[in-house]
Length: 248
Image 1 (cartoon, rainbow, N blue to C red):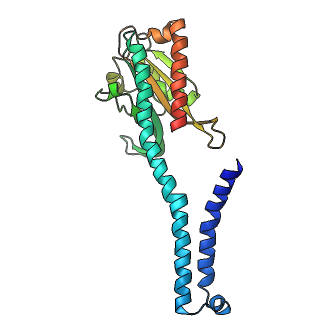
Image 2 (cartoon, rainbow, N blue to C red):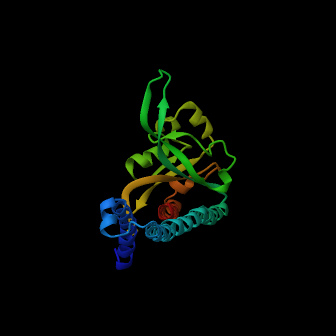
Image 3 (cartoon, helix red, strand yellow):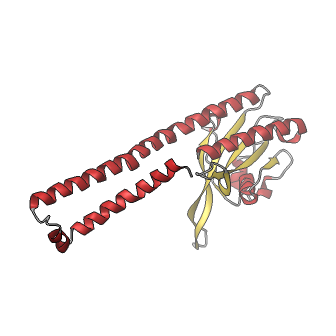
């Protein structure tokens, strides 16, 4: 951590603590009597000064960073759209309508038919998807973290690819409805997204999501079967997953 960041973190911690300490201290009658600040006007002036420090602290360390964060958070998905469109256009030249979606795991309470409740069960939620998935039936497919190719990638912490022209989808722990919604897919590749360390911006071992690449285009499975194409495809999809890691 550099000196600037250390100073900012220390300043952010000390100011609210100091304000709280002085407020509590000055609320004690014996202290105010000892300091001879029992006069009403004096107490008003001290209160205004403390409020001013509190306001400045909130402005500098809470409100301004929050506005900056909202702006970055709002723009990052547009930036991801642009990068995704570049990748989609590359493969469109080869007759492949590539689709991309980003899923993150979250906890959810599940009720099974026997009405037993299982707490803290995780499932995937679609955080973002490429524009060509917007009106597809599988755009917001409901998957548990132990289902699908994405579930395999999440469990193994590694890239998983499936050629659905020869592999049985039921082998990925999918139910009939999930299989029916994805029956037109020719292949799917899932790459894990790892959390970045905020200090050194290096990837950690913690998975925060998966990014899926698939297509319904006939012959698109060659992207993972053909050795030459697969090598290029892996490089491009890994680069996209690294980008997702940086902006999440």
